[in-house]
Image (cartoon, rainbow, N blue to C red; front, side, top):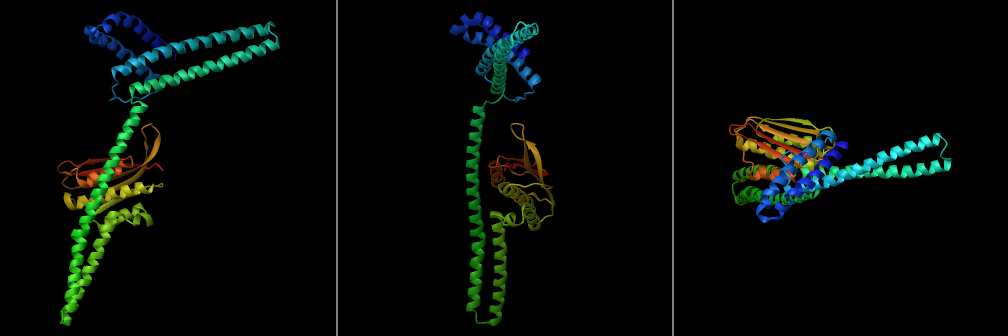
Length: 376
């Protein structure tokens, strides 16, 4: 605190001396930019000193990549100088009050004060002590808040970024939903509809046929076709939403993904706590889409899936549970992060404030990692 008062005095003297010397040059348009550059050079040095003081003595951690504007640095140093000097005044009054309290105690021992006078002095001293401590606390809070706004994004900037992120994620989710609907429509039109037409033709031929043996063969073929249609319809339903998530849970739903995959899938599931349903759904689709891509496009011979619930840190440094999903295959790599499938996954994960990382160098392996916050 005393060091802060000293650096505030240094900043105040800098404004008084250097500001006064550069004042005429700052007012003249032809020399304003040069004079402002000289002034800001000292301001940057003093604000760097303040940043170091906050980091060393108060443990503040500021973003390394964030660069404050000259206007923000100038405003911070001005506010810091006045609040630091005011803090020095409050500390001086506190020290003066301590000296007076000592004198009152000595005079009381000597019998110069009666009990009524002593109680009056104690009451006044207690009120002044409270005001001093409250003033120091308020100035400390103001100092910390000013430092956060100068050396890192301010609350307004964070709110603006958050609004932009939400607007972007909302648009991405709408786009992903539309793309998913178009994909389902293609599956139903190109797959289910064609097979149902073929089934109707088989039944029509069986009904019109006059040869009982041929009619029986057509009915057997129609029966097999109907079973294939049911299987394909079940696959489409699972791609829309797996009912096993509601009835059996995420682990069993992921087991269904492994059973339906054409290549071996090794799954490691370590989730010891409750997971919100939207997070479970997003984790399922990350695994399902990644495994499907690996089986269809990567030429992989094996896929490993790891789902772990662990603790992480949020933007404010507080703990929060995160469901981490990692899918890795031994294929040829080269996955396109901007493709419709992976792009839809990224939008789905971003809608839950999660992150999706795709590492797929040519030659493989492909690793897809998703981190989904479990904020209940």
